Image 1: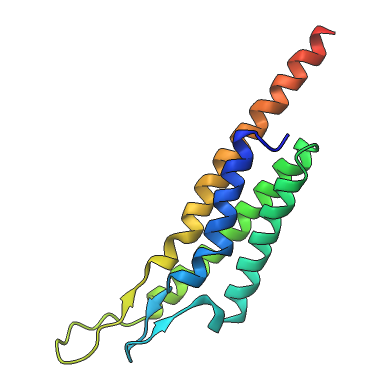
Image 2: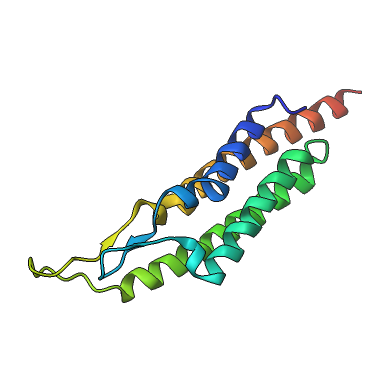
Length: 140
């Protein structure tokens, strides 16, 4: 059933990885222009895989075990994406010279964290549903 709570969580994870990266820059470069995820192929691929897994998880609501496995795989993809962001952010300079434009970290970097939180909540709800079905099967 699509009206379960994990569908809402998966939909929020889909929005965090599929829609919001177009709106929020990852960081601001030294020249003052916004750096979006679309400039780097690895970021595009990881966001695309994460978004695709969220959509497939939403559509496979009848197969809870597969949905749970896809959620875990999606969490791993988002952790890899977060690791790439952290690696790139450590390589950005953080100047404090007031005459230069300071490179800033953008809000787009926390999108994988938002996605991980909601994917974890979705997996928790999927596990709860699976346990409920198993307990009902024991009573028969």
